[in-house]
Length: 271
Image (cartoon, rainbow, N blue to C red; front, side, top):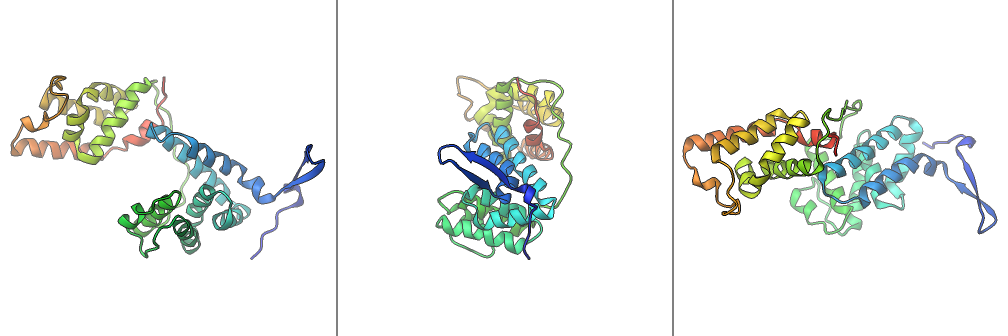
């Protein structure tokens, strides 16, 4: 099926250096906003993660906007297959996979292959991480997510209200650091590595409405006591042993995991 856009979608600009008119294609007109947010996301630092995630949310929102019309979907299909910017191809392929999984997978696999990766069906975590170059690795991990969870369903934009209390950026940095450590190794590991950040992180969690997370950190502090600078925060967790403590730590891990803290951090108002 072919798609035709109205003549009014063509935009003509005077190229002064050449003295001739330049045509901006209808596809490029529709893709302009997506291309801009993709470029912004890829040139931004990965840390703080909450800031980078906000940019990726903008990429998803632009993709959703394009996918809301037939013309936009046609443009996304063509972009996924042949856009000169591989990061735009990645964003478009992920969007296309929502309504045409086969076409989305084909475009993602092409990105993996072009990055020197191995195409496995289904994709595995080890094969995805083995892709050395981007955006092939990200495309491989997208394939992995499709295998496990299927396409991201259509849904209305969430009501992402910023926190009512502005928070110092360094406190949000502490909260993000502690939360990341806890999600990867548990609250005892987070205390061992970054116990000195727990008070600042607790204050930040309170300010953004994540009281459960704040209370978890305070319970860890009550359990182990203030971290000692002499020990450089290492080895403190092993000073307390016993089955009851292990059970309590497991409960605290579960309570923290039950809160979408990262989304709250992403919508926080920073000072």
